[in-house]
Length: 186
Image 1 (cartoon, helix red, strand yellow):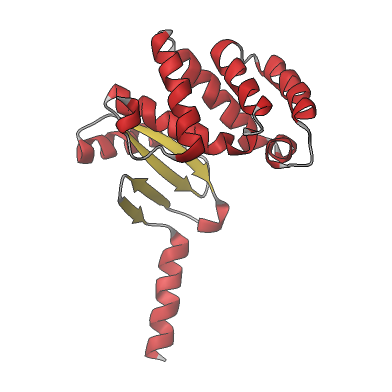
Image 2 (cartoon, helix red, strand yellow):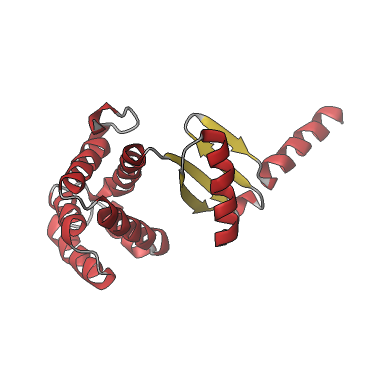
């Protein structure tokens, strides 16, 4: 079932599929998803953790020791913690962001949800997130899981990628369009 999803392939897809199938078999998809999201948030907020994850300079033992401390402090245990330790031992921790993305896609497919990647200039409040989810649900007919990324360089507005569709209503894009139109006119 999960292996039929063409959006997960390569090393990250294989690891994500293994994590998903283990979580499904243990009936703990929600708990694993919460822990995966917690780890993703740690990565998003901590450049030192990103360096630890991505740098080939650290040995597997050094990464494992540091990861143990991070997981303990974050309260990430069980399947997710063991999975991250396997990634570390197999020297695949550098692919953790892709694994997380693929795992989220598998969970969304399993639940009959769609996944949208949303880029915003500033964090959205709950009211705006709910409105965006409702709007996307009306388009897709499915519940939509949002992967929100904050990128101040878009200045304002948002960029939404849903499946093969993308809507870019960022202020940066609109300003660039005006700039190009002015060059052509001038």
